[in-house]
Image (cartoon, rainbow, N blue to C red; front, side, top):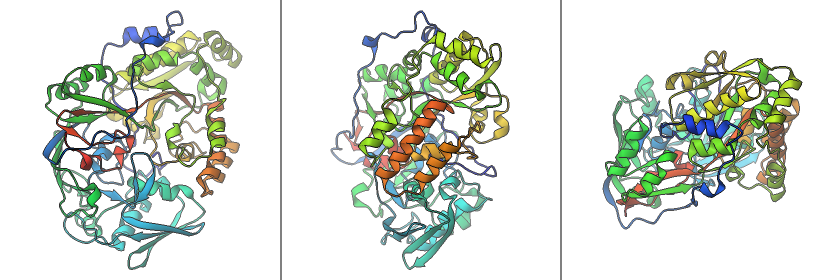
Length: 554
């Protein structure tokens, strides 16, 4: 999900990525980025395989504990835009559609939908659903919940999903019709994420500014109710016994999610058995946890690509030869090995194949085969810098003390820039200031590059390329290409995913050639389960799918 938003929005937007454990990275970075020792030992690559589903529980469990790298910024669905927020909200609130662990969409609070004209989507709202306060779900709740994304006073993080919406109306007792200003295939696909969440209209009115915070909490329809939020400590989820979907009735009576910002503390809590599980395991702790005798690490489907966002095209990186030179000067395999311990692979695209759901075989071939490879080639990179006439110019790389991957990548980029004749400065900012890079243009002043692990929230790569159209909020560097824009606009209007994918593939090739962002690597989602619990699907869909409801006794 990486929608664009208006600058009036007040919430912070970030895709910081799985936060790796902090460690001693200087030697690793130097070896990853100096030409003489850059080639990694292929035999040292870790062995891992994807797991679609862990073993089914043997029974229910009274409670289990979970660890999160951060406290949620907000549990108001309009602002839930990052891992810490959505991993909690996914178990408490539900959307019109359900994004499944395999990244397919199925009915959710809308038992069905129709698309009678290119400009209209009609949703039939499910009967027999109640909010956690016992009141029944009604079509009016859906209209109110969706309409908040259009309200500039709310400043929703999800405005981009609604940017082509002309009207949201109740058109029947259990029917809601959304009318678009133009055909928009992406709108319905976004209804499986936070953009499609439904909250009680009465609760929204009652809680006002306290809605979604530790005082107001939320009142949704999911398998768990949010019953407590201790700021700086934890949230508590309690099974909602009147939940409508028996197939996803919570197996645990209670879940406590603990906030631990220190990666070492998170790993120690898992190794000691203090907590039963956690998402996004620090890569350099995977081997420790696998050998701890306390549980297992699983690897699952992911949609994130680790990239360097080019945030200033007025400086030397405005020349595409300089962007290419910098990518050629980075030993991406070495950086992958140092940053995430080799759990993943170098990529030349800004999307993973996992989001190309329904794509044609021809589109996949066009999108991924024959892309520019950008192998480590210092001499070619230096020549490009000479041709561009920018030797001696400076680039500034922003980073934050968020984990090993941030340290390795920022230092790797700086070393690469210096190796080809540029000056480089690493600007270390606080985590909150780093978050602001994604939401506040002023925060990016003087910054040329910053790292993201950018995940998609819908089963379509067009979500990524919509971000890079001219003028979009998350097109942080202001990159613009008329041919690219035309392709994305054309694809947005196409309903058939196979046909749409063939246009999107052309957009991916342009991004690969012009490098508005510099793709580095992709890797699996990770999760640790103690020997007490099982049942989860290790997929990045945990951000929208009620993963905690599936966990029971091992």
